[in-house]
Image 1: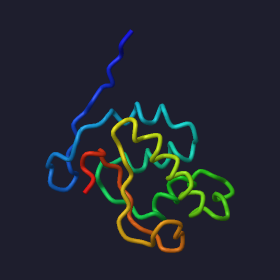
Image 2 (image 1 turned 90 degrees about the horizontal axis):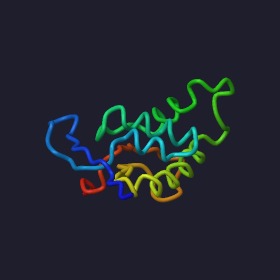
Image 3 (image 1 turned 90 degrees about the vertical axis):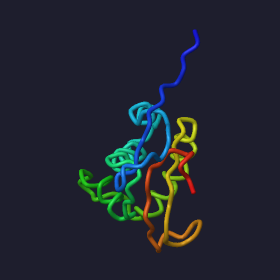
Length: 121
């Protein structure tokens, strides 16, 4: 049986302009196996295309954790993000980073947003 992936159209939260097409976010969430990864996608998908500060995402992810999360939450976030990008690419999504340090730079936070891959600049 051939099943075709559903596609949705997404618009910019600021200007309302077209930013791309991708699979529905609920399909992406069902493909993400880690709780941390699902929480990151939940936060970023709360407003598709909106930029969120790394610390805001980390706070959301570990808000209900009685211990407050891992000692190296920034490192855990970076590793989870690397894995997430690979998983969500099959659904036409990417997580874009603006600002902050380069690869492996945990001390300098940036802004992250979930966008359809075709919208990447």
